[in-house]
Length: 438
Ligand code: AMP
Ligand code: GLY
Image (tube, rainbow, N blue to C red; front, top):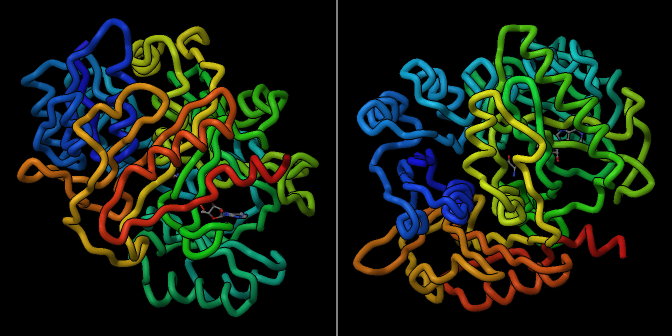
């Protein structure tokens, strides 16, 4: 197949890499891609968010499939545009991407569909929001309705912190239009995990469970990042939970969207809080009464979860994505290998705050990292003068594979040890929650 992957991060490198593993072989393009995708695909110099330019490229080049990585082009209607010119596209239409783009919309859909999630109320007025705080107790979660680059969620431990967050969003306009509506949400106790489901408008197939590491420092300390590592499977999701997650969370959402006239195709990513005797930590039961609650939905593959989940998939990945994009998904389309995977993100010093770019990366060779039990995905890199330079906060995603999670983690860190650039850093405790449980 001729396939265009839209995006330029570790997730898109992993998608392109996994497509390149398909036995049938594909002609791969990435828009715009990065130094890593350049080794396995043809990079097309078009920005991921430039809906018109990507549609124009598709009109000229007739791809069999376009796979959209990031949320921004989905929210901007890239899939609607591609459908309009008859090009199969993997990803939801803009109306479906609101599951990620608007937390209020996602809550409405969940409530209509009876999906367990934290109790929440929506406010546009700061005084009314503050007056409602006592009914939520502490901690309490304050969320901007729209996309705020991962910074629009404040878990407040005190009333003062909660009131400050409300003022920042509703009075100080900190997130602009994205924060013009605010959700106050019940704090959910437990351990988080990610479930990525392929969806074809009607049916869904769950990909293997994973867990990411959002905080920047070891021991889950410091500010939130886009993700500092991931592993799969996540033992907090016991096998008996998977059918429940599909039947009570994923499918009801897909059906509710369909009722609203939205045919949702692509990935539905459920960020879940699991609160049972197996979760670490666990605490008071949520108001929904359920042990598994939705924290958020995303309309795309997670990053870095994708770098840990896709290497575990067998079979033809392109067929699975095409079947999802065209309403023909079957359980057999997803084949899971009985292996574990762990991904370590190598970041630029200073991330998630300000950091320098343009540092030469040593030890990543010339693309021979795409095989075997350690794979290096590029997240923020740029090729220049025969060198590979850093060009982002998250720079590389190093995935190890093994028969056990311990083996996978060791393989990943053995790979990391060979790589260096000025001021690089990474977390040394990836998968600690899985190991903590013994
Ligand atoms: P979100 O962008 O909604 O995923 O929120 C970012 C992070 O905030 C989540 O990954 C959780 O760690 C935390 N969070 C969000 N909502 C809640 C909640 N209701 N209870 C506890 N933690 C939450
Ligand atoms: N790893 C979290 C996300 O992709 O949103």
